[in-house]
Length: 376
Image 1 (tube, rainbow, N blue to C red):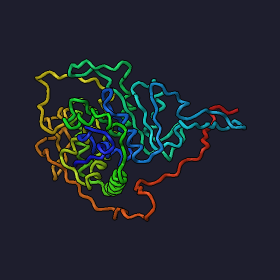
Image 2: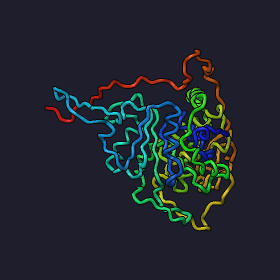
Image 3: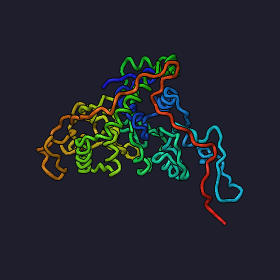
Image 4: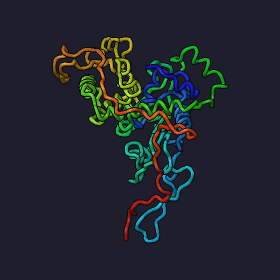
């Protein structure tokens, strides 16, 4: 599946991971970008919010105070509730939120971000307008290639917080760019040109979301079997995925399939699996001794290659044994995803109205209240 929506927004060199970025837009699940300084993480996410016409909030986690998010608290007259006085920077009316430099966030603030990232809640209050929760960070480890890159203050995320992000994407650096992308990046005229010409990105995401909900209703059994088996195989190499993560892996695969008209091939399986493993948000990379390093295979993500035989294994059509059983019944082939269309995509719209396949959500009222922590 090849798309170039990000390039039309002025983001170059992200073609390999573009399906995963778009899948996060389809499912509206939390997205974390990890990359070196200057690789375009923040620019990408801010450009997406602009292209989708979202009410966006961009916070620097290294500087943020909790009052910046919720506003200034004050009790009502009877002392039964606490109200929050909003400012233009508070999060209540946001449709998308970017928590930049999240790995530099104070531990106490990281804890407060749990409910925002996972539940769309702050201080126990629901945020019905909030759709997208994004974050970005520098690597929290020394460069494994010996380049000497080190980010003082970029700490490993709490594993429980990292596990709340559905997609964890390591973005490409200069050495991964094509010659053409390097020329685009070097051109100062390419900065700040991001527009969603004709609403094509909104149209693509809206159609894929329509398919995504249809796939959720008709969940292919093979996807669950794949998630279960891969999790067991990774566990044999001490790469643990939580039960919550296994469920999220299945959901991520559905979102990627929805972008490809309900189809998945081996490449998309591998790409989605790689972006569904949260370990880069907290793990230091260590070089394996040559005698224990898995054999490299074209198209197979390195982390996945640590599984039993160094390849992505999918279940046979007859049965899907657990990892403790024989591997002879498993084969490294794509799992076919079959689905029945949930109905026609409403592509026609009344003339004179803007094209917006993304459903509108009524924002919350301006008054936000929470039960008082202390009552007389």
